[in-house]
Image (cartoon, rainbow, N blue to C red):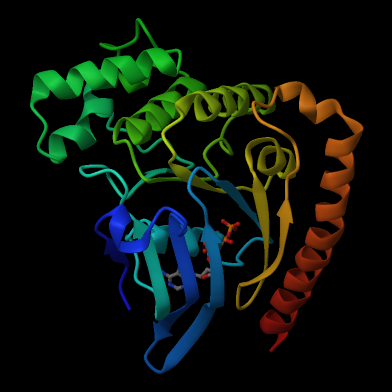
Length: 281
Ligand SMILES: Nc1ncnc2c1ncn2[C@@H]1O[C@H](COP(=O)(O)OP(=O)(O)OP(=O)(O)O)[C@@H](O)[C@H]1O
């Protein structure tokens, strides 16, 4: 079944989720006759304005799920629905781990690119791009080329490019994983601030290996287990917004981190045992 877009809020009503993932499964054909089940029966909703973080062992299908939500791949079973609340908004926009920006385009042209593809006039697209570049602290770098930027600055461009599309659902696939630890924290904090200032009732899904990142940014953390990937648990993150990065240092944060880590650890070990068994078999 393919991704189904719901045309307007009146179709589903504001009480319905922004994103509905129902019984989604995914199989890949490895070679003729051999199939690999990567995801099985994934069901969960993301509410309007909700930020969901997805964690799980390597290979449990987090990126596959995110790619299907983005429409870059198709579920083998089940359905994914995104409620389109604002006409003209993009259903999704994705920030990937590797700087997926064009080296031959300037920073502002990179951010304007998606808007141009959507049919916006160059002048209007550049105005929007420049305004987003200011919000991600890249004011003054509009005319620079990616080769002259640090890793953190390139990822800021990628975030600005995604947000400039004004997506219903912002999708983030390990967006800061390639950065050094300090820069990663800085960008987490910037994203937290941008998210809390946004006020546009968009939703977000973040795939990450970092529990600190998952908890600091998320309203909910979804834990997946591996092979095939299923949803094992869902944790509410009870900290009020606006949140401050200082939350990381609190006892409550550490307790929630421990709770999730205890479950995640089991999944990581189970996935590693399954991989060993598959290698032997
Ligand atoms: N195009 C494909 N063809 C065959 N197998 C695939 C394909 N894409 C992904 N897989 C397999 O599906 C499983 C899930 O992959 P996926 O990248 O979604 O996992 P992940 O949880 O995001 O992993 P990681 O945390 O390591 O990034 C893995 O076993 C992977 O090898």
